[in-house]
Image (tube, rainbow, N blue to C red; front, side):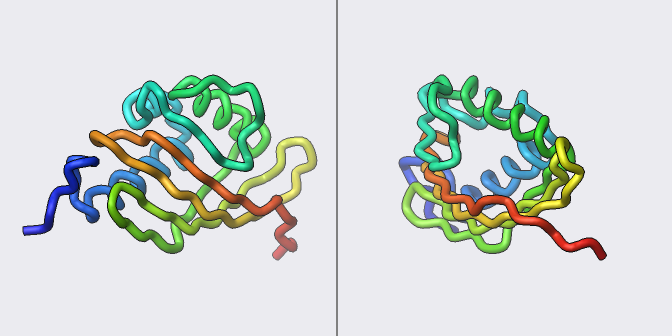
Length: 137
């Protein structure tokens, strides 16, 4: 039987599935309410993509994603690689969407490191490319 990490109360496979489900619900299904379940009250976002002045915890993540949904109403994230080690999950992903102000289809890639404790997301470090155009088909 796989080892349960005492920091996360999850196996590495469960941690990866938790993060996969988080991206699917929070981003792809645009379910902002899931933030109140998935993010710890004191969640801290260290991502270089996060605008200054957002509150910590679920409130800040909901504000940030609501802004992204407004700019890219059809935003979608695809997980390309995922690694779990200790209390962290590292994700390499690709994002696509249509810029609402220009109608331009864009894509960008990113790397995200999540720290999990007690079955919640406690910290995030993210490095995202700037969006660039997808040539028309």
